[in-house]
Length: 278
Image (cartoon, rainbow, N blue to C red):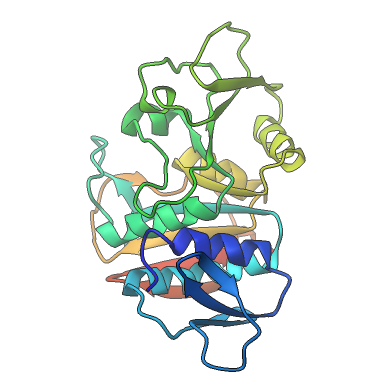
């Protein structure tokens, strides 16, 4: 049985063996193991398709089908993700965002976090949402939390500084500040986003999930610093509110960002993936 408490193990196994086109896996008390047997296997993976011969929660199955191609193609990935309404809003003008997306999208998001070595957010996401940025829904390994805080506004009152998980804060500020379980990295103000990207490219963190907010995501999109961008779209119309991206205005549709795309179902919602490798 594939459950929330072992799906992260499956993702980890696939990541470690991503160069093998074909995988035949069985589930045992010792975990998920590769087998060469001719008989019926619990899980069959060929290229980017996956067949389960064991019971699996529908949302976890759909999550596997969406995430599998992302982790099979490259050994280093920057993946952008944001949840939004059908009319591209992530919150009301007053900041309320609970909840635009269904609870199943939270499970999917935690699956994404479980494949990631680091999860990147802007300072406003920490201040407004005070998130933990962990994989608690699926029992996976927690990624390193990466926070863009140019003026170093954060203090130890936020949740991410009250546990033992690792944080890295990127700033342009010369302030001296002690943040719990945190390394502060000072970068030049010029080309700051590119500096963050280059730092991470040189680090041991290979899979980076850029989780928000709109400004942070837009900077990475505009500078073509991501491999994939995913929008989790709720069949909801909000009208006024905060947009999911904040790209610079263009005057000609020839300048619009057009990439190879894929659409997948996740419960009642749709995940649209743009492939920036194309």
